[in-house]
Length: 447
Image (cartoon, rainbow, N blue to C red; front, side, top):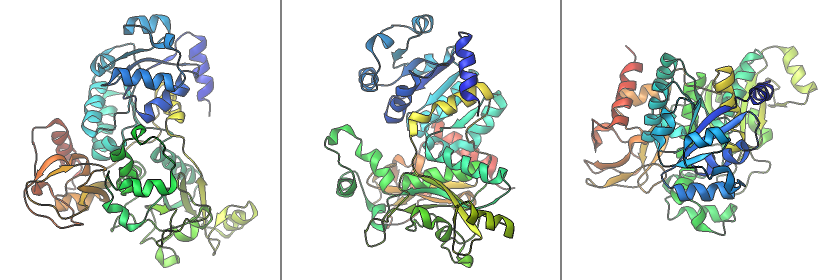
């Protein structure tokens, strides 16, 4: 609860926390909008493949041109400005940069940048949850060996959910479930970048379709992003996936403790200690009143009659029995809140969530029947969506992780809804991300 004081101390000493941002997309730009105004933080450099787009993003986030008109990192540091380039390697290698924020959204890039940062003694805030779901447990081990922090991104839902879980456990409560809200109907799993507009137009008023990436947005709609984010939560907290993956039961904020508890206690979950994502839409397409579409939650148990009385007296959100209660956060502000992770990593040497084991995975599952010779197009595309599965089932079945289901060719015909295996595709065994993932599988495979 003292991060702002620690940042002010660095500001007063003339030693702000120095940050390098890789990827000036939506999340990165939201971070930049607040980083410029945060005393004690200095974004010394931004690396993006499209420098002109990065400049446009800065202007859109309210940055005056004079703040990023320098032509080198040396000038940026000397003048308390920001240097924009397409050279991520140089940004990572500069010894004056303390924290790297990886916000590319590309799993292979995220892994490569993180490993390079560790070698250069940098803390890493991994906005790129796709990379964390693919290889976070091994990245966390590598960071620890290097003596640096590897952290989830505060403001994104996984880190906020981890905080809920940590709060509950620190207070002595047993965690029954945790997760987030989203908009879901079963047919969404087949959504693709062409049809996603049929869904988005029902609840978002997007006047300029060129302003968003439909493939990226589709990954939120088709269930993939939920699987990715709940995998990150499981690997960080010790919660487990349910055997059938996420069920997306409809629930309002006030029904969480009734819905997200075990079936044996009248809820919808197969057991306690799992992740679940609740839908803001009923199965017949009607909006759930007081839904949690942008929020996060934890359900916990009062193990004594006294605690349960307190649930009632202090107006928590208990289930009908009074045994379970829910705490929720109605919104998340993604990049606007990311400074919390940056400050925590640099000043406390503490992550805002980090993988502690390999418990959950995201497996590539077909959206339609596919023919041998077709190329998969990855997250949010036309071919596959990401389904949460236990790491054990993924390892035992040789299942193909979604993060590597891009630009690989199918070797056989497959039916709709099939979970793909490594043996179903032609992949490059020498690819860096493939090798790192394969190494992780061996490191965490039960002996």
